[in-house]
Length: 577
Image (cartoon, rainbow, N blue to C red):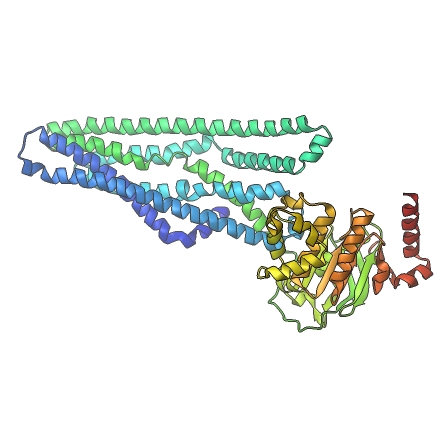
């Protein structure tokens, strides 16, 4: 029930529109009832050949209810779907806003396909929560009360018969469906999530699947998941067909019993014979309100399962605590790491007692073997994770006292896996500065050595670069990332393996652009490649999470420590090529 009330809370802001939709639903069914019983009365009364004046009210009533039914039906559909689509939109925005503070630390254990399934498929399932779970029972209760009053005016026994079959079709039948389809709603949500996740993973890894000859195995896995989903959907459709048939059966039984009880009353003169057809058609028309109820518990279970999957993620607490933005006054953009220690799992330290300073405008490189803790420094500085021991200071301000937004405003990042969006070159640049002018973009493109490349493109800045920038070469992607960092013009620059995976010629071109980017900025460069380090003010050498060496390029070579060994190995590798 906790998930149910949390879903209701999300729906609550739309309560006024929901009430209008429910009211219009009642008016729609009421107009349908009014049309049929007025028509029945008109036909029955006309058979007695009365004067036209006696039929005038019924004639007007038929016209009124006929028009009203169409108008109210349209308005009911409009309002109910408007509420639903507003809710879906709000839910997707709410879920995305809940994800942002969790990234990347709290989301690293989730598959991207699973997250996509939750924000698309699971949210889509929740449209049934209002349309088929909340609204129909309320409409049915209101119609039941009105019809009991209506039949009670003729004879209480008629009201009891109507109540019995209405409860049978609207309460007992849904409870029976709940027992027959127990767990199927949860299984459907899980099956959809499974196939969506597999499809996203297989599309993202299509190159590797083909390269390793696993196309048939992946297709078979997707086929099996699809067959499970189809089987569940077939079972649900069969259950829905059964409930529709039973609901129709109960409606006609109610009609039959209504006639069985009404005919003797007409014969005895307790009820005018003109109303016999009215009583019968009142059953047929009002049971429209019951039609949506039998599958209510199925849709409720499905909605609760989808809601639980969403709340499972949004209930996670961010690993980074944020505060209100604290302004840092330029030019105090030096960085100081004091006694910094950090562990991802709470047991093994990725960093241990790290101490160093980068003065305003200073250039510091961090090198070391894989797993030494280099990228962890970046994660902590960007506040992707919070450290347990020690501190990082920006100027004299502990970065824990800054909001994550404040830090992102002050830092530009060029990483090994810089993400480029499936958009134009211009749109990818504007991510750094949405208000940038054409002149500003041209200036950073020129400094990033991309001017000639873009000039040769037919669409220039409006060229689409594909998902992840796959239409660009590795060097072009990195230079575009550098141009974006230049456009941001942040006082602090972080380079995380920015030249990894590039050939020697492209690496030199990118490094030239990088050193231009460093001008006037506090720079922290993470790298395992030792090219260009002689231009850095200071080099830090990490090993097993500890700072083992520190100094200039020449000082570290003279010390003949770990850096010297790495340097010698690098030169030997180049010589053997």
